[in-house]
Image (cartoon, rainbow, N blue to C red; front, side):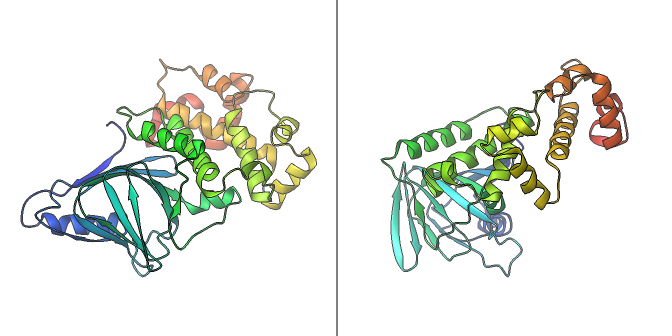
Length: 315
């Protein structure tokens, strides 16, 4: 795995259990009880795709529960999407116990108390989804117990398959592709699990602004992208969309140019001169000429695109 990964293993030794508990508590916001003999070789490997955290967990004979907000590792700003891939897990919440077998997918909110019991070895893929990113989409739903995916739903099954496909990757795509994959996961989780079928009906301001931003990101290379085409892409009037952005304290076109410059800066950081010339970066970000691009870029970052590329991570 060539992502920026973080991996822990429940190894043998006198301090293995103590180290495991410490990392689970401080890095994952989970209190852990275990059997020091049977929990050996449990592992958790974690990385990120944009705003979404991804973990592959192989857990044996242990019990996990979220910490409270009095601790700095509290995970209350996140929802956890959990896909059981092998074995099973029992989840206790609200006085009820539910069993999730391989193939099950559920969402759980660590704001509310719950206990996960792994009576034997089981494997899970876990997505850590920021609630703030869901609120941008107009989603404010939270549940005191597990929100369970419909195993008979083709949308849920397709979402499970995509999560597994992404989790099985052995090499890392570009930073831009990783961000896009994270956004795609958010889209699918919302559509298939949190608010099935309702996305096309939601027209609240937060969701419209988010849809406009997504449209901009996916059409950033189009030099003719303007207010009218963006508004048409999200099926609202130009005046209404511009008004929504103004209420948030920004201009729609200013956001467009800012996003183009940020994409260009990312490309310059991650691609060498032999991969893309300054002209090619300009075209990929929707600028018609390298001169126009260079002028706006220097105004934003204080250096020319070529100097920015040369300075790289030292900038």
